[in-house]
Image (tube, rainbow, N blue to C red; front, side, top):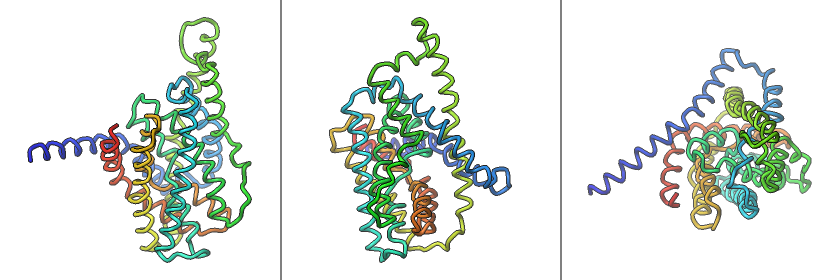
Length: 335
C-alpha cells in the first residue's frame, strides 16, 4: 500500500511539473484572447503578423533548432520522423472518420470537417514550446520539425481529399517557408556544413557563422510567443460562430484526447523508432486539435463551425488532460 501511495505521489508531482512547464502556453492563448477582446490585437493585424511568423520567424526557429542537432543527423532517424508523421496522421484521419460515422454525422453535414479537425493534433506553435519544456536538450524539438514535415504531407494530400472530396492534391502549398527551412536544415546537417553556423573561435568561418546563428536564434525566439498570442485572438473570434453541438464537442474531445492518443502512444511504445521521435510522439498524443482544419474547411466549402467547436473544446480540455497523458505515457513507454 505504501509503495502504491508513493508511486501515486510521484505521478502527481510529475504531473504538476509538466503542467507548470506547459501552463505558459495556455496563458499566452488566454492573453491573446483578452488582447483581442479589449482591442489591442485587431483583426487587421492578423494577416501581416501571421505572414511575418510563417515566412521569417518560424523558419528561423526551425533552422536554429535543427542545425547542430544529433537527433536528425542520421538519415534513418529522419525517415522515421517523416514516415511516422505521415502514417500516424493518415491513420488518425481514418479513426476520426469512423468515429464521425458512429456519431451519425453525414457528408455535407459536418462529417468531413469533424474527421479532419479531430484527426490532426496541434503540431506547430503550441507543440513546440511544450516539447522544449518537457524534453530539455534532448534533440526532440529538431525531430518535431522533421515529424511535422510528414504531417504536412498527410494534411495536404489525404486531408485535402477528405475535406474536398476531390483527388487533386495542392502540392504547391508545401512550398512554403517552414518546409523549405526543414529541408535546408537537414541538408546542412547531413553535409556537416552546420558546423560553420555555431559560435566559436574556430577561425574566420566561425567568426561569421556564429553571429549569423545568434541573429537567427533571436529572430526565431519570437515565433511561438507571437503566433500563440494571435492564435488566442483568433480563437476569441471563433467563439459563438456556430451554436455548440454536444455531440460534436464531446465526440471531438473523446476522439482527439482519449482514443487517438492511444494510437500515438502505442506507436512510441512498440515501434523501433529513435528516442527523440518517441519523445515527440508522447507530446503529440497530448495535443489538442490543430487550427489548420478550420482554414481547410473554409477553403473547400466544408463546415468551419464544426472544426471550430472541436478545436476550442479540445484546447480547453487539454489543459487538464495534457499532464496526465505525458506523464503516464512516458512511464508506460519507459522514457
